[in-house]
Image (cartoon, rainbow, N blue to C red; front, side):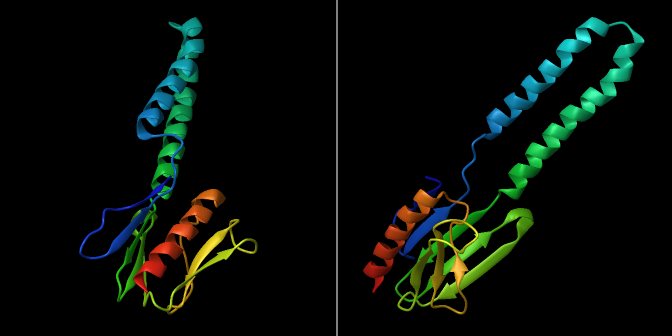
Length: 161
C-alpha cells in the first residue's frame, strides 16, 4: 500500500502517505530508451540520404515530448501527506507538487473520520472533521486502500481518547 505507519516515537503515531507509481524511475528511463530505439529502426533505411536529416528533428522532438510528459507527470504526483497523532494535537501536512505546503491541526478528541461513499471527488472519499475546517486525506489512494485506512485511523483515534 502506498502508505505506512512509521515506528512509534516519543512524538506520537505518524502516518506517511504517497501516490502509487506504476512506472518507477528506472522503468521511466528504460521506456524512453526503448521508445528511442524503436523510433530509430526506420532510420536505418534512410542512412546516408538527405531524408534522414528531414526526419531526424521530428523523431528527436517526439522523444523529447515523451520525456517531458512523463517527467511532468512525476513532478505533479510528488504528493506526500504526513499525519502526526499525539494525545493533545493532530496535525496533517500535505506537501504538494511544486513546493506547495498545506497544514491542518485539531484536537484529536474532537476529530471524526468521515467516509463519503458518493458525492466526493473520488469514491469512498475520506475526510477529517472537527477542526477549523474539514480536510481530505488520501484522495490519491484506491477505494479499497481508503477503506483500510479509515479502519486504521479510527483505531488510532480510539486509542488516543
